[in-house]
Image 1 (spheres, helix red, strand yellow):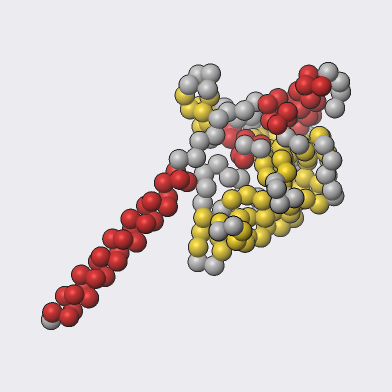
Image 2 (cartoon, helix red, strand yellow):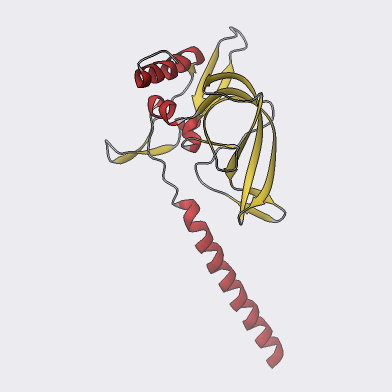
Length: 195
């Protein structure tokens, strides 16, 4: 009886420690805050802006963290220079029995088309400027063929420093041509010339 009681006590103690560790690990993900950026700000911050189609996802460990590596086929380059195929590295993903989730990180499915505002990483691949804010999903109206873009943050609250509060306010269902015109205008204003 005494041994059984000690085993039960030990099991409860281990469960309490495991729950504490998991709660501590969850805190950084819950604290992710994105400051709102306009299309113009993201256009200036991005080294490369592309329209691309997702090809595949893979996950792996690097420097002690799980990363998701997404391969995209580049369809159009709106700013900078990009090869025909690029790899985008984003924190989090699933490796074996371990899942890492970071709020504000976009995930992609093979076949979907997007506009991405990108910056190079020290590893030579790319990351997305302001994560979900720098991600626009392309939709095509089956009846008219018209393409529109919706920012991943269209329904996500981001911090607006001017208003000093969190607000949902991303771009939803805007014409793809209008989005490109906004990018071109921002780059022309920045350099005084056309991009």
